[in-house]
Image (cartoon, rainbow, N blue to C red):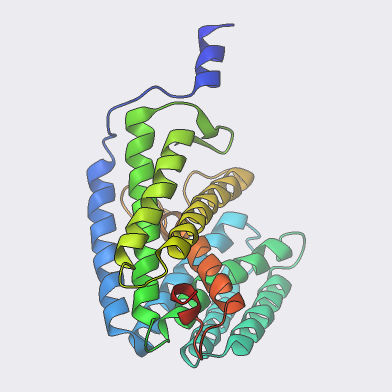
Length: 285
């Protein structure tokens, strides 16, 4: 076995924190502060904030998958569908959300045409999963803010812990062909850190055991969402979804984990109804 073969088998050794750390921190603090402010305010402003974020993600997705035909028209059609989904979520209408996203995906796929039509349509569903999930969770008067803050704690905790653990511990790679920098150590430490931070935020409940396992599952799903986006970029031969954010690439690169986690949490809440609003299903077991 050669030295390169051995390195491939054992994964990266512990390494110093990269030069991109401070730009990443600055961008994360700025975006996180705005997201927290929108969460605190709630209502239409919260929905508008995530609608704008979903439009950027939709635009990045359409550029990513190619099919250059009528990208602007695809983004406009998708943005209308995302707006309808956001408004439906604001009025706690799951049926309205589903209808808006299905019709929007069909329209964007038809506009793109050809083989890439399915990929283009999937972008509406992906961006819509974000804006609809957070909207349906936040609309709850009793548990809306708590559900979004809990998601932030789980996803941000998992992401930060995985970054530092992966670099400081090293070890076998998680999925080298898709994301060479991610390690098993980072994924495991990140998942448990996200679960613990989410539990700390939700310590006011009396369902700590259930919330720990839900937080752990949500953290794992967030990491899988990160890997999914990495695989998507590999599929289309690009490094970043765009260059909008220093140290992060595009907005989709920054929100991939949160998109999958929020969608997972919303589905769990819908399948575990405990009141008029789905967010109660996260905290009442």
